[in-house]
Length: 157
Image (cartoon, rainbow, N blue to C red; front, side, top):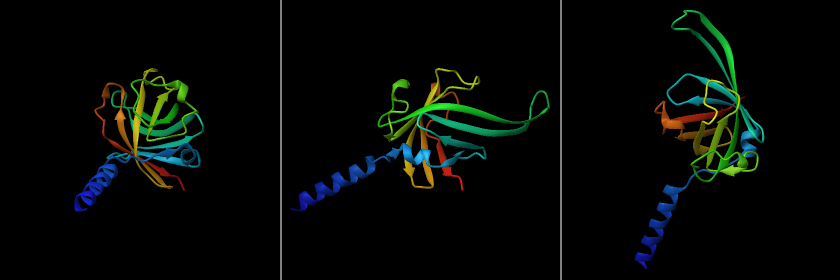
């Protein structure tokens, strides 16, 4: 009897460790969000509809070469979908159709600063009605060495 209890406890612990957070598209669409990367002060304002994520970031800095003040808002639109696994490639057929998942994959559709083939996947590691924690798990060639970095979506008041 003790062996059975021990086995059940082990199975429960393994299941708990492997548990991931599932997100529903309705939570994303129901709010406007602020996206903050762990360890930075940059804030991106984000909103979602069925197919797109709209990101807006105000930039204010002195250009290092021209010494001109840069004061503008950068707006980028992304298509996105939710899934239960990390894909080897971006699947445009899932956009607007995959409404729940443990991962969110985004693809730039409007910025000329990013390669049009690039896509990024985040694992949804924690969620509540007011915040969602995302962990970067797929980034094109990880050129910024940010795999594993945390991002926080906080509901705007």
